[in-house]
Image (cartoon, rainbow, N blue to C red):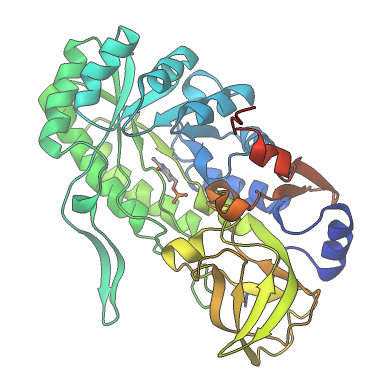
Length: 420
Ligand SMILES: *Cc1c(COP(=O)(O)O)cnc(C)c1O
């Protein structure tokens, strides 16, 4: 069973101050998750989590994570600017982007960020753009093919297809690329790979670590490059559905340690630092979208119309993703009514839930759409002239703080160029 991190009473107080819909974040939960992650990898002295900014690009959130010892993983010019303005600098910033514009590389270099190259051709592009190759450099690896984990009667626990993904260097390109970068002046090397998204398995990171650790040993032997860090990237998932088991980050950390001791330590590479770039795992469950019931519609189905729409949370419309929904104050009531929960976009996929069993819903009820703390607000858009919502932080002392105001029509019109 999934319970929201706020009560009906808290929500009623909040909605007096902040009109719905809004995204709400739980500072306590964020800090606890960050601490668990840090503890799970405390055995690796150089370990650092670089929070994937794209998941939740809000300064207040980034500040909390900074206090917990995290860096930032940026992938665009504005994400770099955001990290800079929040006080992250130098090697506290990882720049993992692809199809990268020149200006982005320039700013990443100026900030002293660790640049993680996505492609072999970016080596020359980077050199031409910034006039040099940084002494510390990283490359993203793509092994191709299909990546699977844990086969059972129901299929694979994890399955993804790196061979169809646009990211990263092939194995051959990686060996060539490291030699080339070394010849151009690079001294400290890192490798990175992201092979599967939202994994619910304690084996994903250890398996990925095994692949990258073996690769690192071969790369160092063959190219003579000094591999200083290995970046396990994102991909540790969260249980969006109530019956799914959560990952155990302590077990994940131990699993990676075993690979480290089996592969890197005997190769004399026990000083390699590990990095992660988690977004969803850190923030996903620590945010929710709060929305109010505006309308009922009884046609061929029973519809509950709310004041949020896919422009506030795109995942259900885009991926058919499941987000659990609870009705404030009715958390323990029997789910004996079947509804489609919809937003108001002129798109039939604007449904937060289809054929969902919920308690009987009444006009004015507050719905909590769970696990929207990552890739929620940040994927928002303005289709149909819908405006982005506010973001509110439920602070550790129990008070709430507005950390981003809602857009107004003035924001919507601000970029237009009227002919006067
Ligand atoms: C999106 C992304 C992440 C974060 O992924 P999660 O699924 O949120 O953990 C990390 N690194 C890179 C390069 C990404 O693109």
